[in-house]
Image (cartoon, rainbow, N blue to C red; front, side, top):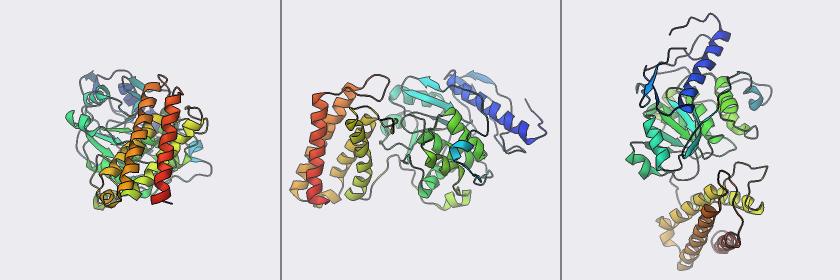
Length: 376
């Protein structure tokens, strides 16, 4: 189907309808595929070129060819970016929900966003959709081995809720421009950091206008107003050109690596602070930080602590360092185990118990003991 639209308003409406049809392709049935290979180019008003869709069973078929697109300039705003994200009205489309993977939106023929794939079945669903590259912006190290076995390539670029740095934007844009799609982009819940990274791809790869990209974040993915930094990264940043990403050196690492123990500890501390916040609130997320998941954060801390023990640098430390590190690793492992057993199904709440509280206090004490010698 081909449409001739005489003005920018109609282009914007057609773009929203096309995007909605793409979303529905993912949210209604995982077996649907795009049979026609579609070119998503900028229309006269900056929207997406509306073209026909035909559905059949099987995997998503997408042209692997890369095209050079115009990157829309930053928006000029007087209010907040969150407020501006309501300017382009999108149709009301619920997210797709599947076993082990939720909050799924197919934003274009090359970009899907959603939650972390929580198990092998969820990764298999991505493979069934035809996904080739999985971009994680969550802190936890992804299950690269399981993904690779299914033909999926992982790229790990952890970002924070406060916004995306220029270096991280370069890595994200380079991933979209140089690796094979379709792409699945995720954080943990699939509501905030993941949609922001996906929006970078929508602008850098699909050439989508920025007001539409932030509208997808707010109106479909439910990115919260408190994360103005994420919205600003998409709407106001000077996104790199194709030449700049081509010249940028990035090895598309499947798991973020660290320069040394100190570097890892900086990142570890942030996740440990999240665990402490939930513990202080009776193992329930607080209203100020409803998106923190204690198990996710504690697992990240445990992974980083284990990585510290394997670093070449740590071998030069005295025996007492390794003893304290091993003690901390053990207590953190206990915290993770108690949280795994105590999760209230379908929530980020955990059953408080004497065992969990004792493991948390022991982990906290062992960290402080080590800090007194090697950090303070």
